[in-house]
Amino acid sequence: MADDMQEQLEGVAKAAGEVSAAAAGAGQRPGTGKGQTLEFILDVTLQVTVEVGRARMTIQDLLQLGQGSVIELEKLAGEPLDIFINGKQVARGEAVIVNEKFGVRLTDIISPEDRVETLA
Image 1 (tube, rainbow, N blue to C red):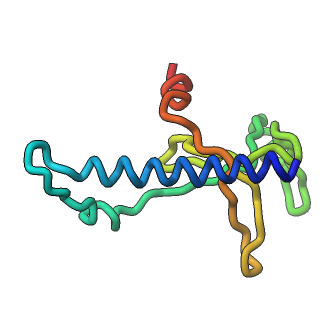
Image 2 (cartoon, one colour):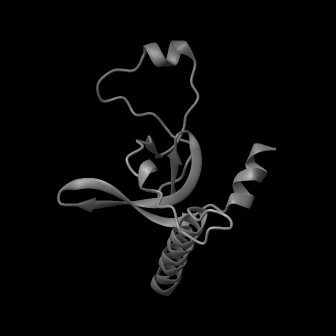
């Protein structure tokens, strides 16, 4: 299981390298051979959302919630968390604790082809 996780993390690292290479190539102007840097978009803010799970309930059930209530989610314990950027799912990960704060470790980057399939 640890080897499988290591392979997945290596896959994520490889995908990140490919994204970096693609971004560097995207900055080149056709015919000039000179690379135009993408620095002008590096400070664009994106909303990152990590979804633990979802639940559907009636308004009546919602109004009965109080402190200490438990909402059952559709996901099972141990399933990967869904990671969205600007509302589009781009990855899956697992919860971690870093410096006494929650974080998420990316375990699977969703390919552009898979993202297109989810739109259909």
